[in-house]
Length: 90
Length: 474
Image (cartoon, rainbow over all chains, first blue to last red; front, side):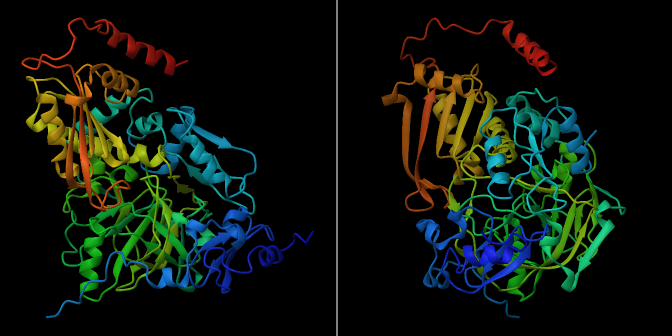
């Protein structure tokens, strides 16, 4: 059992890497107004965002569904919608 | 009386027994989304859901499923809650004819009570954000109205657009936006990006109940959603000037977020469980930089669940999709009685019509496919007789089971157009289409043995209204 007075230790246990793309650049973007209940974390690469109290299927790499996983290649080659148009010339 | 804000409508829902307060503490995930998902599974009378005890939050006020039943949809338009679906669509069509009704400008908007700007902006401070579906890339604003102007014609009130577009929270002051190329805001953004300029936007959350209806309505590019809201309300729509962008926004909003779509920037967005009952996303989308947030004291966060239909989204876009098809078909074929185009934005449509002569029903089905909306959506049409209510699916299934001789009454046409996101299209954007003629053949089409139908008693319609009314008042 770990201390419940901070979401930090729970987050560190549950999400050392991004569940979706396995990137290790994960940062906290929000903390629960009631201290220590949860944190909202975000992957710096694929922007996936999750709350530390969500089910394991959304928060742990090992449990994250295969069909929603992303690779660095997927992110780099994702379609642009809508496409950036050409600049108008005078 | 029309509702000027979300709060006054929630009061009515509560008085009518159509708002359920969840008093037990719930988890933000998966409880909020699962409860709203469940509301779509418990039948036609589902209530709006109110949550104010959400684990980890101190003062969250979250409402979901506000439009998520025919009862709530009727109340949003000021009709008795027992009004049948068919009557709601007819009344919607009747009010549409009053367009345009000029809005009324008011400057005492309640969202002026609180403001944050610059480095103090943090969406998580103001909104109790949460995830809907397992595969969603993050937390979404999915029931907000986004206002923008045509950069080439910024003073044209009608070209100012109010639309619902999905937005993913990708930072404390940043959102990713999905402007599908056919949407009006995509036209605004394209013009701004061609000029290398940012596009100012105002995002309004927690609106009066008519705003989400008009924000999803397929109006012409230069038609004002505010003037349509006035027509549907039967009274001018109250609007106010957003302080940072000068855009016109609903007076009664809970929260007004202002900023810009950054010019020529795209970032990874999604996926998000969409109205087709399938995820879309994992694409690079435009990004909004938030510069100012105004909000009512103790703001209410309104959201909707969408995923595998039916969900609240289907009630919101159902009548919007039925009404243009009904009007376009009736313009040429006054025999058309009713149109139910509520399945996945009208990918499947059920039409009730009287017949001029043998073969007429199939022609009505083909015409539905060649309407402007039909070109992109209508892939299956079931045509039923004038005494079959197309909104009463057991009746429709009876008509199909009893009246269809498949070899002659099912017509399949290959290689027609459809929206690219239609999951069954192959390749994307192309599909075959089908008409099922479930009407009774009339001369000179003399097939079948339909000489002695058992009809509803002449007094039944009156009794239906009477029973509905008695039940609603129990």
